[in-house]
Amino acid sequence: MSQWTAKTELEDLLAVAGTDRKKIGALLDGMGKLVHQDMTLNLQKAFSAVESMATRYSFCTAEALVWAEYAVRSSNYLEEITRFLQGQCGESSVDWTKYAGRYGPDALRDACSGYLEFRRAIPARVSSGQASAKELLDFQNSSLIRAIDLSKRHWLRNFGTWLFCGPFKVSAIMTPGIWEESALQMVYMPLGGHVSRAFRALARRGVEGIVPSLLEEKESGLADGAFSTLVIAHSFQRDLARKCCGSVLHINTGLHLIGGGDRCI
Image (cartoon, rainbow, N blue to C red; front, side, top):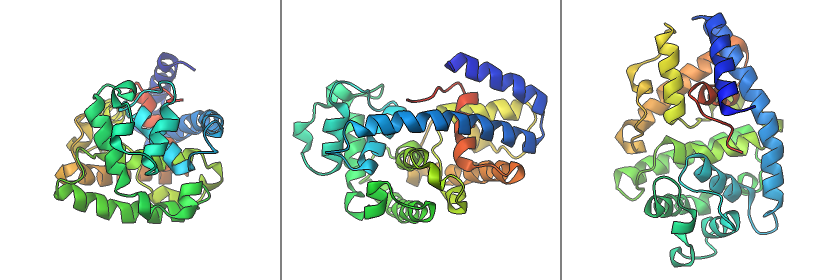
C-alpha cells in the first residue's frame, strides 16, 4: 500500500463517513490496525538483527527517531545509536552527521542525549519488551513528569510530543498482546505534522471537537504548550475510540495516514 493510495482511499471513505465520529473512528481504527499488523512483523525482523546487543526499548527509541525524521537508517545506525542510548559509548564516539535526518546532526545528538535522562528509570520489563499496557503507561506517566520538569529547566532541549511519545508507540506496535488492554487507551500517542494535517482535514469536513491548537504543525517543547495540546489531542482520539470500540493506538496511525504520512517501516 503506497502513501498516495492509502491517503486517497481514506479520503474517499471519509467522505462516506461524513461528520459521524463513530464511523470516522471505525475507519481510522481499521486502517491503523491493518498497518500495524504489517509493521509488527517488519519491526520484529529489524530488531532480531540487533537483539544480541540492544534492548528492545532502545531499539524502539532509535526507530522513533527515524520516524520523526531526526535520523536516517544509514549503515550501522541501529547498532551505534542503541549503544549510545544504553550508555555504552559517549557523544564523541557517534558519527552524528552520518545518521542525521532533516533537522541536522545537532538536533539528533540533543534528542539522543535527552533520552539518556530516562535511561536508568526504564523498568526492566519495559526495556525487554515484556511490559503490560499498564506498566508502559506507568512508565510514561513518571517519565512525563520528569520530562516537563527538565524542559522547564532548559535541560531537555526541543523535546516535544513526538520525541517523548514516539518510543512508547513503537513499543506498543511491537506488542500485539497488549493492543486490547484497557490501559493502552491512556498511553499518549505522538502528534506531528501529519496528524495536524489530518485534524485540519476533519475540521474542514465539519467534524466537531477539534480545537485550534490541534491544527498547528509547529511543535513546541513539553514545557511550552505541547503538553496541553497532547492532552487535548488524546482526549479527541480516545473519544473516537470509545465511540467505535477501537484503539487510540490504531486511530493515531489512521490520522497519520490521512495527513499524508506513510508507514514508517
